[in-house]
Image (cartoon, rainbow, N blue to C red; front, side, top):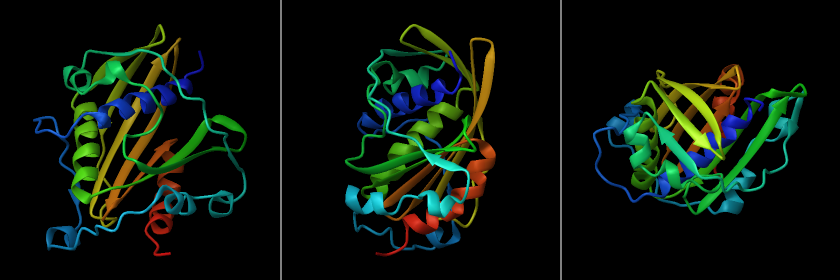
Length: 228
């Protein structure tokens, strides 16, 4: 098994987690907040359609040379079991189906860089009420970073995961979350960085090779939050 497949599995797991109704939990991540958010900046309740979000995704022209857009993956329906992280398991990881978070307005894209399937960057955009976005993504990051190591078993394949909460980039959006994940399977391992930023009623998630996430995060946020 190529380790890059584990990134797909992670996306499948998070889909089920956000489908769980919002509730109070001690594992909720405490997001970084910008000065504007702390001083009462309006949340921005204007919701964008999936079509509008699609137009705000990065494309090859934004990224530059060497990037190739990947075709959408078929939806996976493997049973997913989380081992060694009760908080994550209780949120519903064992019932994961699908490949994106459970907000109705969404758009996503994935690129490979320089024909290297292990150097990928993906972008996801969601639009919903500010509180719903904050609660949903906060609970997931809190559960995942609350367990330094755990295992996911999907379709009979065991994937060991180590998680580390990272300092989120300050000054971007209203709330920020970031983590570094190391996947190990079949004697190989790979690292993936994942950063989420909420700006009003838009949630941006950029995932993939750490260097590519850092390179394109601000550009993705600028395009995602530019008024049409």
